[in-house]
Image 1 (tube, rainbow, N blue to C red):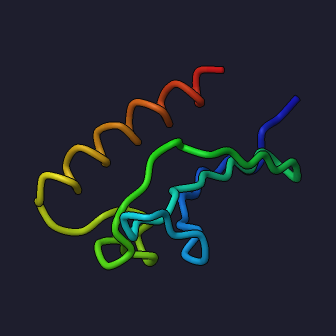
Image 2 (cartoon, rainbow, N blue to C red):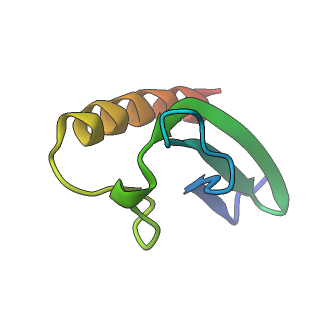
Length: 80
């Protein structure tokens, strides 16, 4: 089987804020024409999210910790 298209996208569910004002981070894996969505089980402040590059901006503690956790989870999902 030849893989023609493989993409990992991250996005926020901005309409679902928790009691701390944070939005959950969701992931989407596209393999050819198949799509699988998953929750990263992480949340962040919507003001820190950059939708153009699908990541958090800045070097605040929240941004660095969340990006590290996302990197670990995405790498784990790629290996499956």
